[in-house]
Image (tube, rainbow over all chains, first blue to last red; front, side):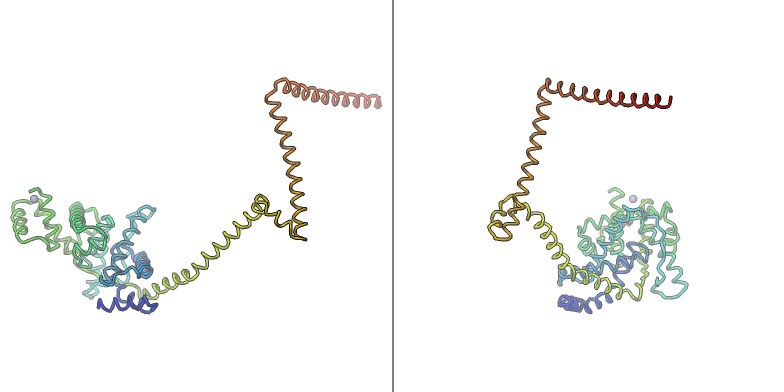
Length: 194
Length: 192
Ligand SMILES: [Zn+2]
């Protein structure tokens, strides 16, 4: 799988555009899920995911074939999302913007009633993540959704392992405190159901 | 050990990086500390919520949209060198058109041009005309400056000039008044 990615990159460097389309096809879910978790809104997530792929395309000559292409791509995506959230905070779009669940939201279980439950829990998770600063949010998402190690997350976010350790600790502490005080709607319910 | 270090241990235990002996220490502490035990329960619930993965699917036309962006980018990049070249040529032309007259006259290039037969005569005429114009303008300018400096340095001259201006304006004023009076008298005599 990894070797195939590197082959496609080599083809792309040789001018084969179809090779890039293949890479997009292959990694679109990983990238889109990351932007969706980071930004919490499907239209913005789609735009950010497209932009992340474009950036990867523009800087493909900087990609080190020794590393995993997916990790490199997700690193571009998470850093882009962090920047985007920071910029968004500077504008009138505040943290309180409404969260719209994605129509294509699909739970892995697949049963309709579980999907509905999943939607509700998903909204609660978004509300929780929204409480965190963008670099904390990225660390939590990469840890839980991508099952990455501290070292991998540190490399992706261009920081140290101990910084990631403390970010995850602080994030958990903050979220646990939010759950106790019940400031985030749906969070307590989601955690009871867990 | 302070509670904070146990809380850090709780976080690490959920990341499955806490050594077994520390795990023992943590659980021992939680048996006697209700606060840390409650935090563990909350973090555990949180861990389960976050671990329950729900995958979202990108739109069906996602790859096509990305490739569209890529081709727009390439299109723009294709024109980029031409845009830069055009900009350079335009700034060069602007520079030349600004510099040419300056070089032509101030560096004396017109003298060389004047040695060419037909062009030479035309250029010479323009140069002579321009030089005359400059001479007249600088003479007038010098006169004005001399006059102003005389006024500002010599109080007697200034007094004379001011007095002359006052006399002239008084004379004009009086003459106009007299003219108006005689006209109205003539009028009244006619009508009488
Ligand atoms: Zn304690």
